[in-house]
Length: 466
Ligand SMILES: Cc1cc2nc3c(=O)[nH]c(=O)nc-3n(C[C@H](O)[C@H](O)[C@H](O)COP(=O)(O)OP(=O)(O)OC[C@H]3O[C@@H](n4cnc5c(N)ncnc54)[C@H](O)[C@@H]3O)c2cc1C
Image (cartoon, rainbow, N blue to C red):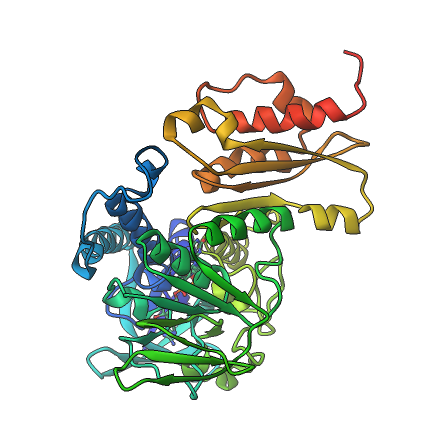
């Protein structure tokens, strides 16, 4: 039986960061990955493919130039599934290649197969060639991620009715699209296809969506989407999804209303991929969504030598945070405890337009009874915005009236997911409004919005003599 200091189950962001970190600390490491190639959901069906599809859609549709040349402007007149697929295949190949090389360079062994626990230290691996292998690990990390939630009642056919994994596997441009679930994934795909001029209907059973985002940003977002023809049905419960005679899905809402579309994307949540692990054999149990509980500082499960990180432990379920969790878990496992991650991390939603946020939103600041002032900048007020032909986009910053500390930054518009890091640095370094007032920003940039928003707040705040 092969034995290792560290066995990592799953090669997504959490698993790969943990594996490389443990190897760099001089330990023998095995990564077991259920797919034929490493990378996890992040590389094969989640983060990277969806962002690549977004980039392709924006480039081929000429989306970024429409502010200047009008909404009928297109770089490529007829965009087909194959056009979307080319960039996807190339990007994924490159990502996997880089990862495989990283594992090789660091002497991390990888096995393609599905792991299940035999006891708290031993795992059986059903390899992709159907052979079985038993391995033992002194410490183990569970980084198996999630799978899409697929209710039995929905007639998925991976062509007209798909989940978020299938939509990317053989992308096509539908004549019309219904998206069920206004979570991050549903929103991203709804807006990417809408940028390709596909008529989109977004259905969400709750009256609101993306509740962790500042409401003013969401209002702006809804306005932009409706303005370009996206139908958003909030508070609409789906009672039935069936296939019509032509194969097109028909969605029936409570109250009897029906929506027929060429494609239906069901994006109503994901489940921890813990079923195949046989966790009872190592003394662990999961919650109703298949997720594991961990100590949030060390990422240890109830069995101290077994760690869990990434989407399998639930919120925030981001590739970015999963990587950090994996690294912290590996360091802790080998006696190198890390300081806890800073309180505020950025959240990026790669919709069209992008949304990104860090720190407290206005609703949270109010709920905590903190006296605050808010500053707003519109991208169209910046020279870079004029050059780029941006018609929308805004930044909102919140500052404490008492301490002048930055409390939160909320951005919607082009480049939001990059711009947010300036706000993140100031926030986590406990900076104040004065940073933005005193410092010079490159000109013309979208980052100038920080200056404009800060001055907007400053003009309304009590002045401090210099
Ligand atoms: C459509 C979509 C878009 C996203 N966009 C973003 C984004 O823009 N930014 C962002 O930060 N995050 C994004 N995410 C989330 C991000 O993909 C996840 O947070 C991240 O992939 C989680 O990483 P992980 O390490 O938990 O494992 P995953 O990436 O989920 O990988 C887990 C791996 O474990 C393997 N595995 C499972 N069970 C076993 C087993 N028993 N034996 C062996 N191997 C097993 C699986 O095959 C899989 O490859 C997106 C997700 C989706 C679905």
